[in-house]
Length: 545
Image (cartoon, rainbow, N blue to C red; front, side, top):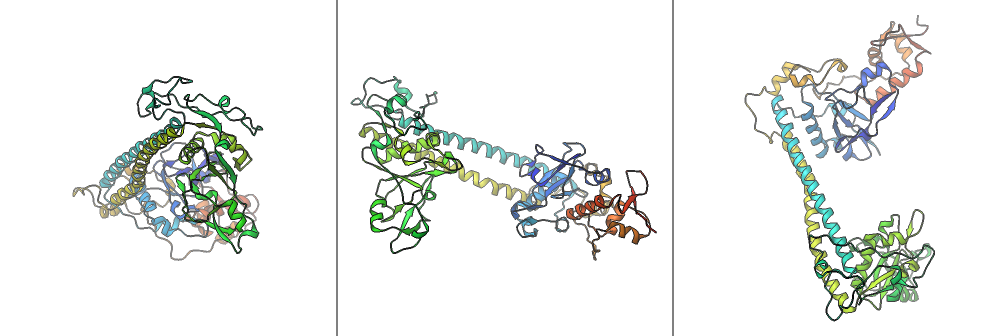
């Protein structure tokens, strides 16, 4: 059994060898399909044209490794492997591969179409300079991406900590009128989460038992709070309800009404660009019409982490209702903005995920939601908490957007770098370099038998493939009846001769696969080897005249 590289092993970051599969390759097949150091491997096909032609450089990581027909192998001749990688990555990023790919559903690059692509060929020494500069600048881009992603993770953690501190009474100082004995004393300087000193993370409230739908003592079930605060249940603070079910009979009717569904509630608030409509009778409108300051939450999701996404209704659409994929919380004893803050924290900290139930689809459920513990500060403090939290989250949002803008710019920078590399704009030309035309004349066409070539020789300037290989003017018809081909030749044929005379094209992976499938099926039945040699074995038809 022999390990082989398939398209799934070629990633945007290079060749991933953690999941190499194995299959049987005969000695003759290994001679054809064994990878050599310096081979450039490309994905031959993909469901997305943009993913066709992903390239990776083989560096001999595994001895005697082969490749599958989902991979195009390019063995350099007039070009350094590192520069070929740069050119092919440019072809991928700029859409060259996508434009030449063909197919319905699965887009195929095809070895023949790939070989006919025009290739920008600089002098050999300039290829080396271009590859080195490109590698250095791409490393700088990767480092910038890593730093930006680290900053983004830090900002997101800061957002979570801000919300946690807000609902634990740690975000704003206690006013003298509300400060009494604390259930757990905390120094005043620890109330500022912007401090670089470590701060105790507020633990999310513990939840009632899975089968218990009531919280008889929320304070006992949860953690300590400032003395002026109180643990209550969500249902103590407002009306909880789910919306109307969407049924086929309600898709149309006399009272078409826009409604909010779970898909309209995003991590960033309400998205009302895609509101649907269904029939709500006047009585149903009375029940399900939204009012300003209603807090809306997603009731279910395939991911527990997405259950309970929350947003505040501000009356954006008159007469709008809501579906049963949405929980509506209508506050009467708590500030709507503070309730929204608590619910967003519960979503981010996993409280809603822990409360949700279901197989496949996780449901929060109005009854479970109504019994969740809720940390309630005095009204005046709710207002101060909301104002301070808004300031901090708005500041974090601006920084997050700046980081995301920079991250979105990096792929374009890399695309521009690759275009400059193959356009001769990355490094000055050296008049002492051997021109590409002279290189072509000196090295000539690639060797006839590519399996005899070692690409490492290019580095020493001793050898050998132009990317563009002339195609035969007339393609012979394929014949899978190898015995008939042998009988027609009137003599034994070597494997390469039989492959060629049967009309197969070595540059098309599907042809290689079809040939060896026919060979395995017919060997020992209608065709046989003339001797026991492994290399350059000859085949003849059984019972040939």
